[in-house]
Length: 311
Image 1 (cartoon, rainbow, N blue to C red):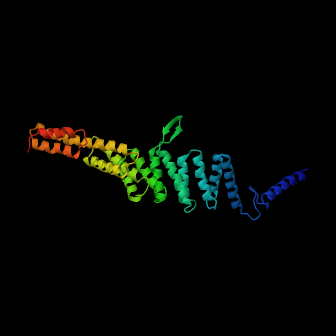
Image 2 (image 1 turned 180 degrees about the vertical axis):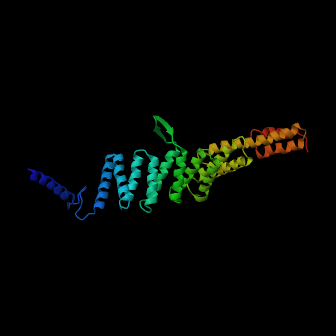
Image 3 (image 1 turned 120 degrees about the vertical axis):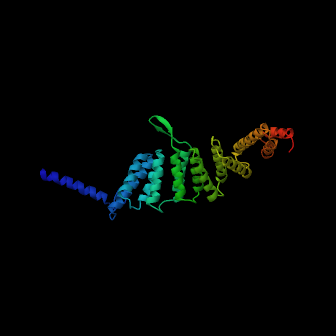
């Protein structure tokens, strides 16, 4: 009885080994001359693919991660690293997906489609830029714009002149503007004008520069240069892109800026007039009437010029 009990396990082991080293090459089985590492990576990839097809992306992630972790030099590792990013997107872990794609580019350079990878990274950045919200402690919170900034910077660095790079550069400028960092946003918008003059975001970048200068000019300690630059870029935008949807908004801001400039000159004219200096008053009333003819102060300035004595 004791001898028989030892023989049965041995027979079972031989049977299992024979099945593993079968010659049929069926999925999950090891070919006769196949290297054990190749068999293991192939098995992990097949498991990942099967789980993906079933929609079980977390299980697929475990298989792909095991492949990359245990066999980083396998020819199948770059593909598995890409699928890690895809699965992370599917479970809505977007920032981790972005990082997974970046790992693919850095650890496996030249492997995979660069255009597809940076396109996916750009779309993740765009999701953050558009105010993507996630659940956290039962509350929905707005994701930080700093991540959008990081992602767009990375995309531009990864492929400066890819089909998506102009939009990534523009997205970078927008994220800085939304954070209130107007000087840095202006610098990044200017990179759009410098590097992507024929792109679809060229016009919006001009408008963005004008808008940043406008927003800077709303501060109590604004500089006159900011007003002048806002007027220059908004005017440029209106002339170059008359059919753009943002034209109306640009015209409103431009009118407001000109009214503010006209008001400043008008107040100086009033000061000179009250202090019995008609010559100085005429200079500034004339400036209002001639430089800002469409402002709300122009008509009154013209009336004052008629009332004041000639030089």
